[in-house]
Image 1 (cartoon, chains in turn red, yellow):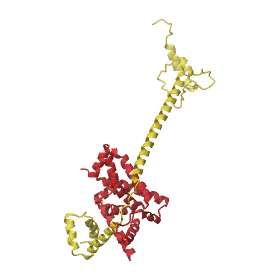
Image 2: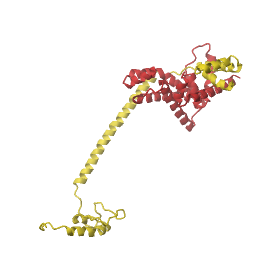
Image 3: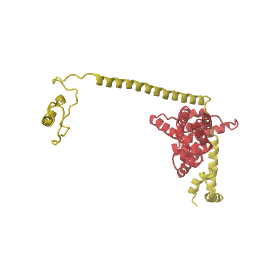
Image 4: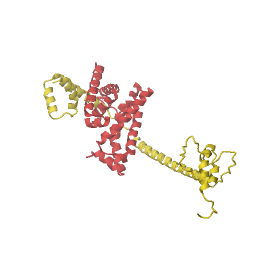
Length: 183
Length: 172
């Protein structure tokens, strides 16, 4: 039984453009957030997000709801992120200054807690950026995007057991990094 | 109970991915293990840190840019399709013209001094079965320029030709 988003995609497959627009609006911020944290380059993440939806749009005829729609979307996003990271690695373009791009992220809503939240955010982003790519993808998909283990496994093309292990290692590293910075 | 294993499962427990007996077992363990309770607290802190990460908001023109790109790519695809049709038509006309020229252009008479326009065969690549009688019109045969080919088949052809009664001979 396809989930609601998969049904929207099937509706788009039959020509309902409004259905695609709904999916676009629903998923764009999530995919953009995920890709920004993965590639650590806001402008590039925007382009990649467009690429994700272009692929979905162009492949609509071939879409089959084999898994949840989020698995499909984040699977594409993850593959594009890995390609981008590999390309950037080859060109030696990665730079810690990319983190500054994340300044485009919305500030914490509460003015009182803004400073604390900002410091926590910076620490976590730095710690995230140092994780291996698959661990980073797994923990972002779980802790930020709220995907369940099966969805993450589908997106990363791996098993649920592997997701469990990836998440454990990622969290251990993040906790260690945060504790180190706090010390 | 192995606490290391529990730690790996604590994440699953916190994520709501641990069910049934495994969940009950871990809950029971947590009530007696301070180390694992500390791990749960650490996971809570990490979850709070993640909640401090604000989602990245797409710029206002993001959707408009997307549809503009869709239109551009579609237009590009149509242009290349149209272009393919144009080139195919040009190619078709060129091929038809070439075929027409070949069909209607008179072949230059063979003077015997230059190479023939007709294909010739090399004996190096062709094995001739001596039992096979080659029957051919001698007039056509003369057009073959390859001397080796002539040598191989001339005798058979002439012998066959000798067997053919002349046109003006009375039927036997």
